[in-house]
Image (cartoon, rainbow, N blue to C red; front, side, top):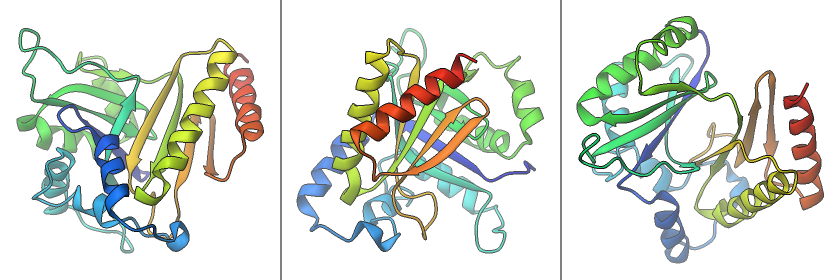
Length: 230
């Protein structure tokens, strides 16, 4: 069993998560984003009737996992990962595949077929050393060595999240730094936390609120780039 809590961000090529969230935001009245609880949309992604592949991870994992002080060691999030890889063509691998990113290990696994989900969950339960050993043997796995930004957002905070993404992207591009991964997830890190951003840059890791100005974002970007170049 791994020592730390893990987040698993599941990208379903067949499900346009941000589009679905935008459509929901039109239909659902605004709620207080400080209440700390994910919307029914985020919760429903994990339920069996969900059309998102993350529901199959939740079903497989929670029927065997044991919570520790009320929390499970692994949390799953329906996600979008940018830059987006195109869905594999039938000539390369079956189209009905998906990708995940395992955090904090910064391991990405691509082109996963549904029948491999139990195996992938077992990998997620391994310790960090074992997980990184598997990188040598599985061509679908890669280590994310670039800067990664994880946006935890909900229906009520989606517009703000997209604005922040645009600001970060602008500041990185303006500094001619394009090796950045953006991961959007539907839901919150914990039920007692409102929407947040995790920045991961090697040994540099920080959790930020979404209450940032463009000046704040530019300062953070410059700090990350300088840290990366040390």
